[in-house]
Structure formats: C-alpha cells, structure tokens
Length: 186
Picture 1 (cartoon, rainbow, N blue to C red):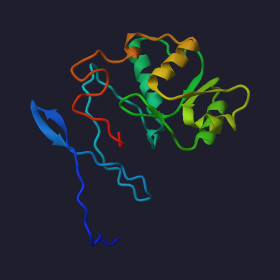
Picture 2: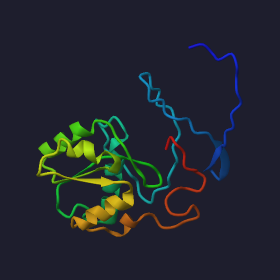
Picture 3: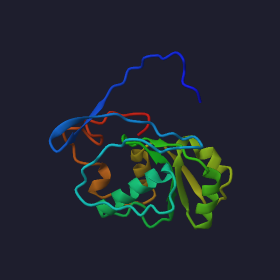
C-alpha cells in the first residue's frame, strides 16, 4: 500500500503509568484484526494481591474473557458461583465490566450442549444466535455486564463470596486504575 500523499494531523492523548515510582507516558495501539494481524497493543497493568496463572492453552481469542473473570472471582471468593449447576459462559470483557460480542456463537452453543451445560451465559446482543441452535435442555441467558452475569448466577443458586463484589475501592475508584482511561482497544 502506498503512503498517502496528503497527511492530516491527528491529536493523541497519552496515558500514563507508574514504573518504579516514576510516571511514564503510555500510548495504546489498537489490535489489527485483519488477515495479517500483528496483535500489537498495550494493556493496563494491575497489581493483584496474589499470583495469578491462567491456563489458556488452546484459547485463541478474547471470547473467554467473561469466563476467565468469573473463574477468577470464584476462586478468590471461595464461593460457588455456579451453585452446582453446569454453566457455560462466553463473551469478551472490558476493564469496566461490559460484556462484548464474540464469533462462532452457534458452534459454541452446540459444543456446550454436547458438554452437558444446562445454562449458557452469552453477550446480550447475541442471544438470538444461540437460541436458534439450542435445544430445550439449554437455557440461554444474555448478559451485558459482569454485574448482570453475577446476578444471574445468584438467581441460579450460586454463592458469591466477598471478592465477587469487586476490588476494594482505592485511589483509582472501583476497578480501573486512574492512569488507564477507557479505550476502544481494551
């Protein structure tokens, strides 16, 4: 692709992060999702109270964001978020807890049914895709946020421990560090 002959100025707002007590600039680069995706980008760094290791082998996209988040909360909370039910979950998640759409939902719906799931939490905007292929034994629940997913799990009999209500308030507010403004690539 040739360079454009006419350049136009754009405004960028740098974020900032603390490194060894110093404030350093931070510039986010959106992920390239085209066929030749480089996968470049920046993400916020969170200080967690415990070491966290996710076994993500074989997961090739952001579709498990909500599932990972719920799994982490369940583990940290010492509760039982599924209430003994077989629950499948899919959806992206951003730092503010919003659940986003995913690809391949009809295929994932068939897979979770075959795995014996009774409930399937999916992005609210995609409920129709899942219901179109689901059989009677699978109840599809559309969620727009982490808070809604937690409330739905509670209604299914899940027990939420104290960590399921989010991190303790700090200088950055509830969940997103102050130095990390929300961005379209998060």
